[in-house]
Every structure is written in C-alpha cells, then in structure tokens.
Length: 179
Image (cartoon, rainbow, N blue to C red; front, side, top):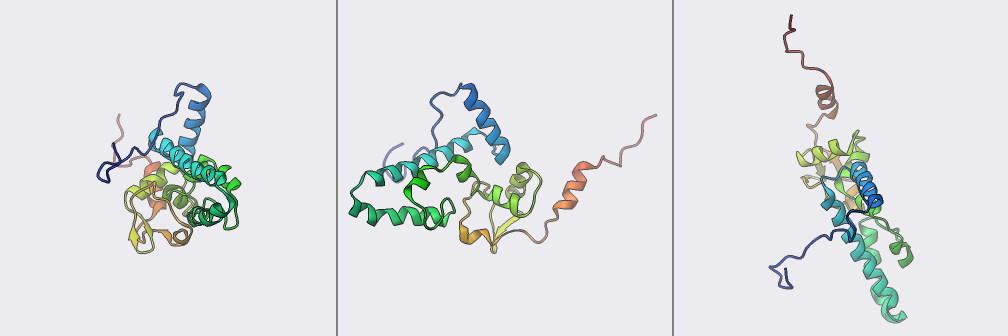
C-alpha cells in the first residue's frame, strides 16, 4: 500500500495491546452501544479520531501567524460534521472521544431521530435501504452525517417499523398444535 493514488491506504490500525482486559471490555461496551458490526469499525473510528487529533497537535506546534491561517480550515470542517461547535478551540478537538465520532454515523442518527429501539435494528434499517437523506437513499451505516444533512434524514415513506417489530415479536400462528 503505497503513495500512488491507485494504491489505497489502510483505514484502520489495531490496538497495540489487543489482549488488555479493560480495553476488551470497553470495546465490547462501545460495540453494543453503537451497534457496530465488528471491532474493525471501532478501530476505523479510533484511527479517524487519531488523525484529527494529530492535525490539532501539529497546528499547536506552528507559529501563531501560520496557525491563524490554517486553524479555521480544520475547525470549519469539524464543525460542519458536528464534532465541535462553531466557536471551539483546538483544546476541544484534543478532548474529543471515539464516542463523539461514532455518534455522527447515519446508523446512530437515524436511531435517535426515528426512535428505533436498538442500534442493530437501526443498522438493518439503513442497510436495507429504508433511510433517506433528502431525496436519496443511503445504505451505508457508517456514513458521516453533516449538520446540514441531519435535518433531512428520514425513513422512506413506505417503511412501517411498528409492523416489522410486531411480526418479529409474535409467535407464528400458522403452526398446527401437536397432540
């Protein structure tokens, strides 16, 4: 995986100490809370957060005049996706947690907005094409929702989650009783 545009870069890094018991418990809690498919999705979020924090640390190391030119670009992009507020500082960027990044995913946004019971049901709803942003269907649960798009996120008109939930909870009535 190299520097050529055709060669993609690795999007995630594994933890340095994968058998740390406390880390494993924390990862499992976050996986369940946000309904992630596997730990790789969590590691991608960790890597993205690490990249953002590295940019903030690099800006802090620059001289004040160069920093004043480059800092608004980073802050504007982070404010656009909802990780920080408009008038935040680089210290706020350094205080971000992986849960802040995961809460901007389409799966989490639709779960809160449509009051879906579990994150896994929200993931299934997205994957099956029942979630729309504006007029387009988005089937990627890890899609990062911007502040502008957040008001446009809605379920497709033909989706009725109450009927699907009732079908899953009721026993099958077509079975014949055994004697």
